[in-house]
Image (cartoon, rainbow, N blue to C red; front, side):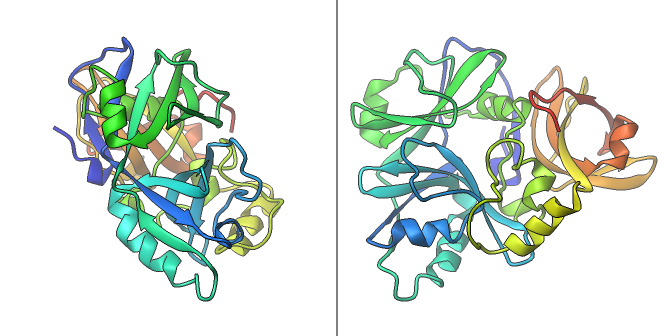
Length: 302
């Protein structure tokens, strides 16, 4: 059973051979027009100009620096594709459209396209955070997991269904790999809960400080100039199986010290991405829904 709208999944099987999943948690927006590049560049935390073959992680924030949406951005023919959680699409499009004004930009949901997640794929992947166009579909590589390559494949739904076999619509293993690779996603449940540094976007290529203005930049840059952020994202694990929804409070010594970003549980363990205070990391042990969790290593340094 899954509760992906609340950032929580249950893993019933654990096989990588390779793993191919239809990621129905995501939708794809197509942004086109003469001014699309300039418009998008002025909205997100990452570079959109001269995107080239990048498969870029970027956040869209409100003026106080809180993340409204987190997405992958990729160039596809004469358009930009934004891959983001389905439960955010309606509100995201409505808000972004408010700022188009006289710009020559169109935004639509590309319902004819699907997103697949592959672990240890039988196709040659590009470099991490880059994409290649092959046989009419895009292959975008994300961070590796357990020394296995991972890619997100974007293309016509019918074409992808014919190209890949053994496809599952259970994405729990994919999101386990996202969690253990230290890659967050923001859902409706956690919209406006985090600023980019709190979930390590500055450590995984989702936040830059050498571009022009965008919503929330003043607050986000101020945190960076201070020299440290009071909160960071870490991986926590427990040997108990427990369903933990996104935005659930995390406790240490009966004090709330953070929030759940995403979680996956199986019969053997529960693994979560957790946004917590730096001070709490000195203790190393946390309580979530009355269950004890311990820190597990991230594949990158904080």
